[in-house]
Image (cartoon, rainbow, N blue to C red; front, side, top):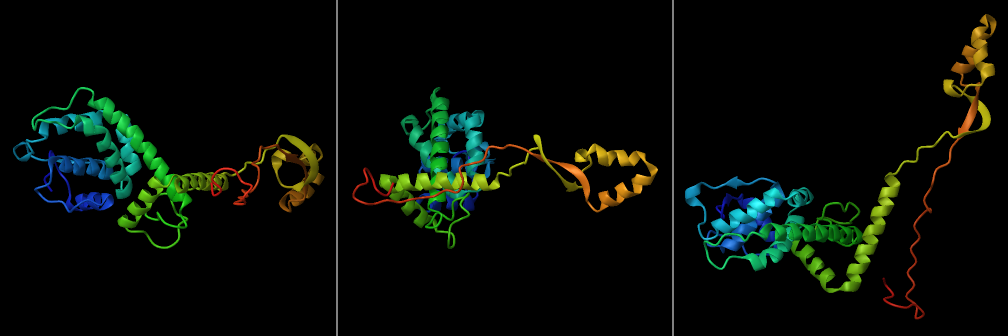
Length: 279
């Protein structure tokens, strides 16, 4: 679809409007809404197809060019693209955050250019959007058994993927309920830490000799075993014990810092508790 400066695929426009609960797109859309479609497409796909000079929207062309240029020059915006690529819910959330920051800079005149400090505003908006996305991921992890299955990074959720309307409703509930939001953030971070611990493989060290055992590790064989190689009559006996993994060798042990063990969660909602009992 022809937007302000770029031709955005209809499917991407639909995903944008569906992720944010907006009206269906049309050619009569407000120029600002068309610009939001372009920002969504940049975040969702990472690429934009420019329109020919003659068919670009003259009403917002100068301002949109300045903002798009500021986005292209900012590394923070490219990091935001990497976080949102292929995820319409995250891209829609980022667009809302960006446009909220750019609201004071919207042009009053159709041919007004973007202000010089718009790059600073875009950078601030990118930082806020990244933080919002991170919190959304944490809350999605925390409520993985309840909902948010459509959010990336939440493979523990039960049931199928939720429609965008349900995700928006749950996100609104989390936004308006500080207690539920706090619980979701805390549990999401706990689950991330637990998952990281499961992926961490401890590499056993070899710091000191602890015992003598049997095996076939050449680097740990006792000198009394290795000296057999120098005697013609003992060499075959060594070869047999080595193949059978019964040669004498040192047993080495190492020290490694371990975690505090399994995570135990206790929820005490009795009257003696102080503060929000659920949290």
